Amino acid sequence: MNQTTENVRKSYDLVADEYTAHIADELEYKPLDRDLLRRFVRQTRRSGQVCDLGCGPGHVTSYLYEQGASVLGIDLSARMVELARQHHPDIEFQQGNMAALTDIQDESWAGIVAFYSLIHFERPQLVAVLQEFYRVLQPNGLLLLAFHEGQEVRHFDEWWNQPVSLNFNFFERTEIEHYLNTAGFTIEESLTRSPYDSVEVQTQRSYIIARKP
Image (tube, rainbow, N blue to C red; front, side, top):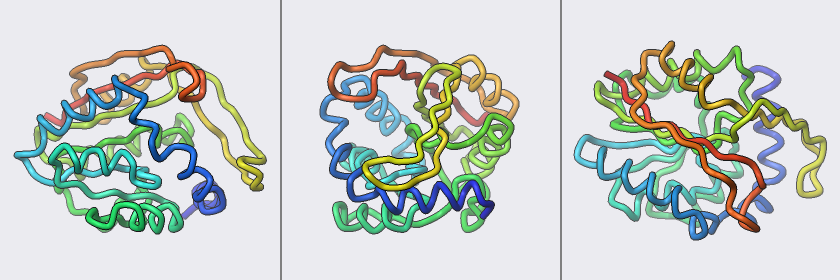
């Protein structure tokens, strides 16, 4: 792993427990997110396993599982994976790097969910990351992305009282659509919503559903 990836891994290992305490139930208050995840499961569950990339403590993974998906969660942080396994013992979780899924064969998954997990990649990295997603998806495989909308970069040196070094990158929906097209995907749906009051960081949220032809 390069130094940037190592910084991300170490930072999330440090904040994993507090992160889990704050966001483990967030989907209860996000009806659009739940609706998109349910639709994703309906479109993929007869085609094989799906993966929640950047799964954190597994709350999105668990929701997919509850909707009937055969799902695997992968996260860079060993502590996040440990917590996910503790909270969701019936689901498989692995430590891994979504930019280099070296243990995953071509065309393995029917779908990928990546909710806010592109946030620590720089723009020049994104096409290669999305090409890796494309590689491991089956033909007709589905990709559901969520990200913070905009051009802002927020840098944290401290997060939940832990020393970290993290850039949080926002992306414009049109640029992610362009990167997806460059990686070979077809865009099926693209939308942006306003933040839910008192539930989450007050930023615009964008979602894209794309398919591997």
